[in-house]
Amino acid sequence: MSAGTGGPDSGPENGPENSPSTATGWLVIAGLGPGDAALITPEVQAALDQATDVVGYFPYVARVAERPGLTLHGSDNRVEVDRALAALRLCAGGRRVVVVSSGDPGVFAMAAAVFEALETGPADWAGMDIRVLPGITAMLAAAARAGAPLGHDFCAINLSDNLKPWALIEKRLRLAVEGDFAMAFYNPRSRSRPEGFGRALEILRAAAGDDRPVIFARAVSRADENLRVVPLSQATAEMADMQTVVIVGASNTRLIDRPDGLPFVYTPRKVEA
Figure 1 (cartoon, rainbow, N blue to C red):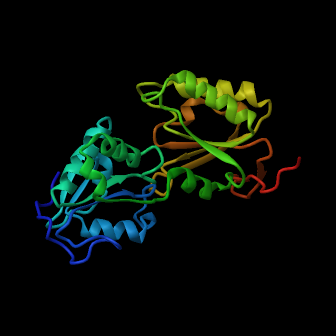
Figure 2 (tube, helix red, strand yellow):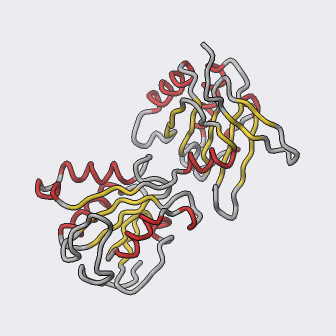
Figure 3 (cartoon, one colour):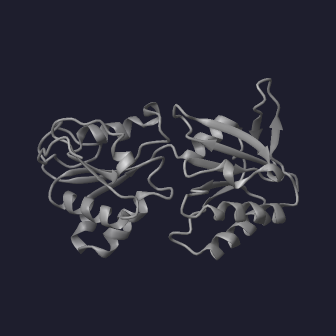
């Protein structure tokens, strides 16, 4: 996918704030937010406007508007380190590169992959202008839609076992319940591993000992957004897919009923001893 092959000196005269001259390459790792273009930060948009190259997973790159002088480099979702290496090489060659992720690039996304590639790459790469620009991660967008379920201590767990063993996921689930955290789950259920989320729910029901609320937030901020809140005892694996963020309340998370049937969910800031 390409919108041109502009050289490193094409585009606006000034790069993102604190960047060197346009003759020098830079690399920005940016979050595009949960989906709605209005949730892309002005800082990220400025970097996109000044980039010569955008690198990322196909669907995320497709969210960036084509324009003369910009080359779009889309790739598969399972080549993160290769993608990061390609972006670093472009930057070393003087290009202005934005590596895009959905949500926030530092939350289960491309920022870690870029630094992994940087650590094993040529020593002089560490001196390049590399910055991470935050975005609104799906967990925070989902929490805002529901109310304030993350109003006290919480944790985020990626339920994919592609990069870590399932035994570690089970351990972290049990410890999160023991610590009485609210929990946000990324990548709960995919076609290739549909059984994992069901096992996670079984662990939560066994460990929690109460019927805390579970929020299923799918495609938040997009046209097909769907939000539902059910007790843990009624939560099923089929309620989630890879576009869903699941938030499980702590033991003191509360509901405020609303006329439309979808309650506000919040976790109080104060916890009694």
